[in-house]
Amino acid sequence: MRDPSGGSNPARIIIVIVVLALIGVLGFFVWHRFMQWHEEQLSTAVEEERRQVKEELPDTREEIVRWLEENTELEPRRQQPKVSKKRMEDVFGEPVLKGEDRGCPRMERQLVSFFDYLDTKHDIGSEDKAAYEIFEEMIEDLAQTPPLVTGEARNLSNLLKNRAHFFRVLGKDRIELAIAVLRSDRDVLEHAMNNFYRYLVSEKCCKEYFGTCIPEETLYEYAAFFLDTLAGQGYLMRRDAGIRTLSLYYSLLVLDRAADQGINRHGIDIRPRIDDALNEVEATGGLRFKKRYISRLQDLKQKYRTENRR
Image (cartoon, rainbow, N blue to C red):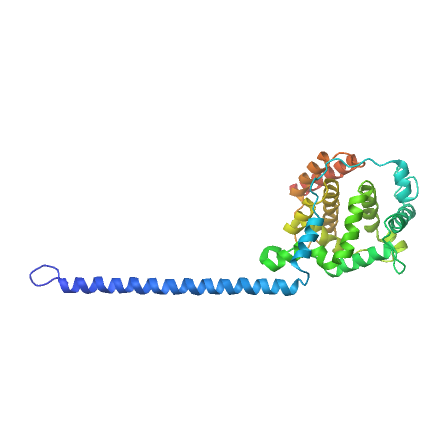
């Protein structure tokens, strides 16, 4: 408003300035209080998250850290150790490097011999339980409590539980047994993993000897865990290069089967991981079945390339 003489009204200008200043001060005060409230809420949420994690993970932090350290290979080796014919026969009970007989009876004999070897050489079995029974209990526990695949990074609790999944489900003693085998028998594990995979994906074979198969859904959940979660990929990175490569390879085969059977419920796209697996296989020396792995991975690559064109 202008005064009758045409100039500005000084009183009105001063009032406007005072009002604006008051609004600024009030706004700053409100903003400051809001930030204090936000920090308090955030702090409360973090403390609540930590409390829940502590309650859900009854094992002490020291035990979990120790487990993670025990699962860490400080010097990942790219060269698989050589294995003699006699060594293979000691573990699998018969000549296993001749021919490619994939019949169920032969795989059964080799798996029975492998568990007998664990009983005698590692003293894994006890008066009450043989090595196979311990293995079966581990599989049952892992099947009943699968890891998180979707939603792992949603909060701190999920990530921690996934990272310590095997420790939490199997416990320290059984983890130590598994680690002992992984470290002392790595020269024969390639053949053992090959036998287990072929046997477990064959329902007929599983029913003949093991009684029941590991459900395809369980195999799928753990394959997805290794390939599609931070915790699973971190676990593989801490493993010896040979075990990491073979785990990646067989996880891809399991996910491919899941896609064919329509049980890929997490919708995982394995195409980017095929090249990763090829690189791992080609970089790892001493793999007895390297040509077979490369051929199978190249077939997968061609399969998904062809499907994309349809």
